[in-house]
Image (cartoon, rainbow, N blue to C red; front, side, top):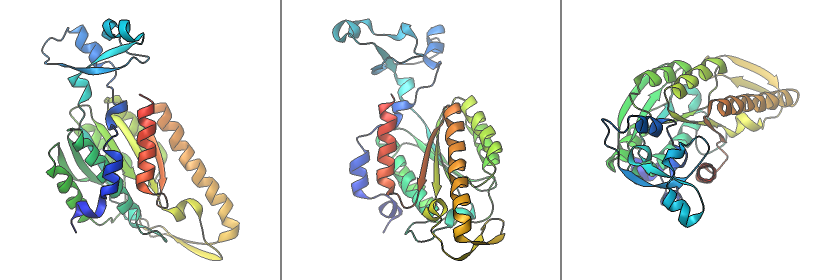
Amino acid sequence: MTAVESYLKPEVITQIKRLDLRAQFVVKGFLQGLHASPFQGFSVEFSEHRRYSYGDDPANIDWLVYAKTDKYYVKKFEAETNITGYVAMDLSKSMSFTYRQELTKFDYSICLAASLCYLMIHQQDPVGLVTFDERIRHCLPPKSRRSQLTNILSHLSQLKPAGQTDIAMSLGQLAAMLKQRSLVMVFSDFLTDTTPVFQSLRRLRHGGHDVILFHVLDEAEVTFPFDGMVQLHDPESEETLVVEAESYRQDYTQEIISFREEYAAECRNLGVDYVPLDTSMQFDRALMEYLMSRRSRC
């Protein structure tokens, strides 16, 4: 069985290929800048229409369409419709954890990434891969050809999560590496200090990049389904802690809720899409719900 067959099921393809990952990807101010030029030094062709939304330049409204529909639409240019995507995958050892689910956090993330890569390539948009732990380890340049999906999944299928992580450092390296505005899809459990990560996200957003955080936790990390005395082990620091499950459960679950809420609030402030997931959720259903919500916001 190939890597593609392992991570991308035919029924998932059938579901997602009618959706458009680009629905929310609009580089703010880009078309306005082109109009100010006006279009000097650019080769930009008219592509299609989209509904007018707050912040769009009124100069882009197509008044002929308005006369026919009584609704405001703006012209969409080819420069706005094409995006370059990067899958950024956490390779740290904690991503290899599973308690009782079939998929580890890493495998679950690969399944999600496979679907998104397929979707981008189906849209003829280039997509690349970045893997990281304490720093960026591998990078496959973005391509839109069909063989790119095989290249990405073959590469990921040969990797084994190991070692510690420095998400903030890795995202900072990625921000410095990107030379054009891109869609960055980050897959991680984000089990680290939040403040440095938020700083790196600000840097990515400051560079004009669209960012989606897929916050993938194991089902046991969310629900704490343990009884009696439990030994908790941090796979990255190798530290252990022995607790009594019943007395620890309420404090633990509240910490996880607060942890996710902190990410949700900060991502909302930064204009980053935040998708909290756990490995008990059917990844195709979770992805469909997210993509549908993304489309409804356009």
